[in-house]
Each structure stands twice: as structure tokens, then as C-alpha cells.
Length: 169
Image 1: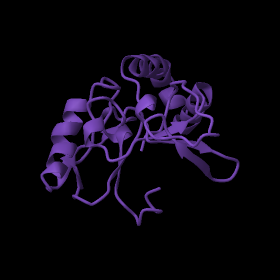
Image 2: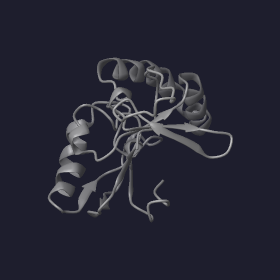
Image 3: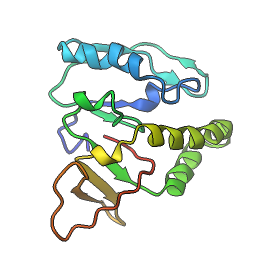
Image 4: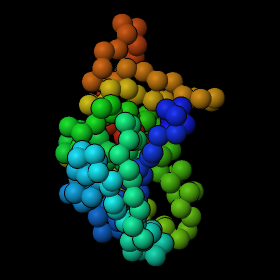
């Protein structure tokens, strides 16, 4: 998506979340990234190193006309006022978790045991999907993009109302 938009910057929420703050990072994201960008200032944040279990060196994110915020929780209630669009990646729970476990390997198996429960609790307390402007479904080749629950679907468009894990952009 970033390439399709001309190489816009991407903020990965995996750089913001931590083992101790799987979803309790909203204030830090607002203070370090969203608020400075809103003042047309460069954002400064320290990405989290999931293997070392500590924050790394400071990264900068200069203001840009479009910045993608990618990751589970990007569509949360506290962030929606700052989003121009909310995209919801449709993916069954088990498929998303299987991909994550494969990506992270055995080193992060303990993390995944806690993540599944934390993610389910997060979306129960603060669902994002009902507010999505677009739904994105991965196809065998490419992606299908549909109007989301917050958008206006076409008359023959099927929209489900489940609330599973997502990669929100």
C-alpha cells in the first residue's frame, strides 16, 4: 500500500507495543507520534525490540501528507479521530495467529500464548471493524477491497459483521 501511494512512510505498531504494553500504548503513541505530526513537527519514538525486550535507538518520522499506521489496534477509539481512513484486513483468527507464530518463531512462543487472549479482549472492549471505511480481503493473487461497515456497500455486496484480528492501515 505504501508503494502504491508513492512510498509514503509507514509506522508499524509492533514498534510501539511492548511485552508489558500489548495494547496500553495509546498515550505514548499520541504524545510521541500523533501530536507532533499534528503540529507539523517530526515525530520521535523508540521502537521496541521484541527479542531484547527493550526500546531501541530513537527513530524519526517527518510530517508527510499521508502516513500509514499499520498494526492491530490502529483503529482503536482513541486514534480514530486522527485517521483519514480505517482499513480492516479480513483474516480468520487462526490464520492470523498461525502467520504470526511462523513469523516470530519459537523464540516468541510465550508471547503468542498471551497475545491471543489480549487481542480477543482488546477487540471485545474496543472493536475497530465496525468503524472501517474499507475491508481488505487477501485473494489467491492480490487483494479485494470492499466498502466497510462505516462506508456505503454496494447493494449486492456481502459484508459480514464478525470482529476478528486485523492488520489495520
